[in-house]
Length: 184
Image 1 (cartoon, helix red, strand yellow):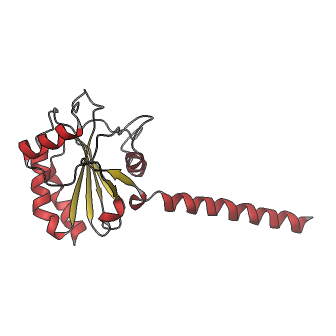
Image 2 (image 1 turned 135 degrees about the vertical axis):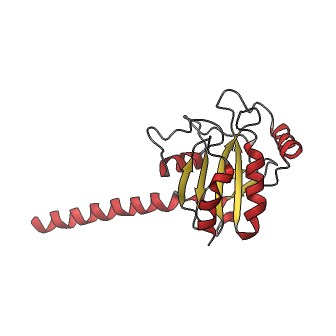
């Protein structure tokens, strides 16, 4: 009987560790897909080997001028392996009410944005985008992990690992040193 108990325990441990492995492999950055602002599905696998900066954006926010700094970072470092991904969000003060077409037009005409932009998403709550659930769980920022405002930034290394989270007030140019380290 003792022998059967040991075997049962080993089987249960094996089952739980397999489940844990399945969960961890299905929750890495490269397992996600998002829809770009043109309506095309994009696998995050497309950004393998790149340093990735992910930002929730808005067109009518006090931080909206950060688009300029983000574009400058992108132009400075894209040939060295940086990609910036913009995710419009309307959860903070109704500051991104526009359609995908209106958002794309605004970003292009006002800030000459050339980095990839995606469809409007929720970053908090029950309907939060799965990618943002993953980012918030990886880098929770004190408390609930919820995004507090537009232009919160997540920096990921070349292996897709979330490295650092930046508050909205942190200007894009302040990320340059951290980006440089990851591009080496």
